[in-house]
Length: 581
Image (tube, rainbow, N blue to C red; front, side):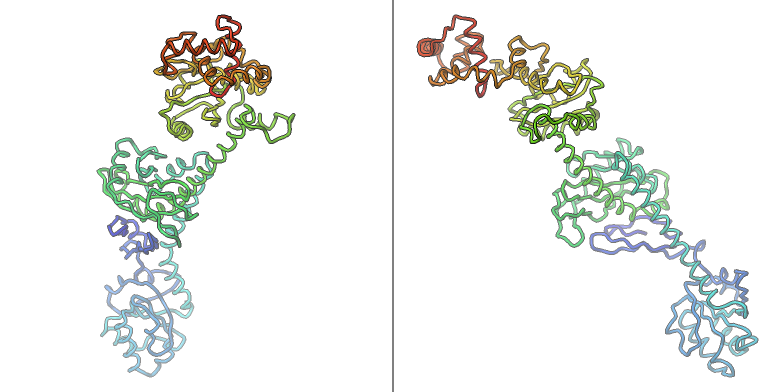
């Protein structure tokens, strides 16, 4: 039986194979040791039956042929059992026994008392036949004696015994190493987590799953892990007391906390019983991410023998999974860094560090490597999260991970606005965007982009559409999606003009408006509320008469002609450029 976390785990096949595997679990060494079975252990009968050795039993006890043989050694000294173990074969030429019947008897008594399985006596070296006194003593003490012909060296007998005893261990070791190589190859696949679990499942065999600690989210599962079994595995794991994950040579870290040891940590193996069969689980604690559970349940009808290498393979798979999880985390961080830089460069979110006029080919190649190749239209989306979204960036990233499928997409946050470039067909685009954002964002969407060169202008379009969508005075308005093609003419004009040049044109007007403390807020509310004094007053939290008074002061002090439509358009464009406009 395997001993797993102070409980017994079946390993009948280990008993049949005759091997010993040492397992280190949480600082303790546990042994999976075979005591042998009739089908695989070495007996005296099997040694004597080897025709190449030419051995012959010269005592009459046939039952002695079933004696266990665990080793063989030669001797020509007195008190030889100092160098022997029980169940060994003792081999001698009788150098010290010629003409000494008393010593022959003493030798047989000593070998018998030491539990030696049999005495092998070489012929035609010092004796032509086994001395009668030695045979009489052997019959008295019940010690089997066999002859060794001159042509057979003791080294051949010892080699045969060692090879016969070691072959089950060698086979088990070869199987274990081969299984490890098979699992390691999974780390080279496109989806190493799934590949590793799919390869581990038939080796044990079992249904295997990788679950996040705490919430129990499934990161990967083998094909034979159905929903009902998965629910039972999750329930069994939740009943376990969370153990401590301790990396070798470092302090322990509580399960579920990111380890700062710089090395993956594994908890001790835990055994649990399920309705489908026996199960094993351990928590994998990579250095820079929360812990995850690796759990497996023996498949129905597999039998105890199929779990021969379950414990060492699960431990090995745990280390490989820790590497795969950390590698995936590093790749994700690397991809996010590339995405952020690329979005900033092609949309002009931040000043480019590269010299102006640099070829666009590197950016285009990076876009293509991330799946945006303009084979279907690309779109720039500017999204403004609702106030209820506390951490928009983290929430959006988690939502992307939960989606089973998503279009090619890169994104970044700029001044609390999520900016994304995605590639998708126009049909169903609005619904697809709502799925991506969970309906918690106002979304401004550019016109379709058919080439890389259209992206800078597309960002201005998406930003202008978002501004129009967010200008609604209704505080109860629900999040919406506005495509630039459906935006107002003013939004179109704002998106087509270089805002820096427009700002220069409006500089004097802007400076003039800021003289009056309430002028900007009054005019902005008045224009946003479609010249409705009552609605604008409510937006500012003042009485309508106060609103009328403020507008009158603006007309007098600023010289603004509120009845002139062209003047109002001019003011609207100027106020759009101010902070909060």
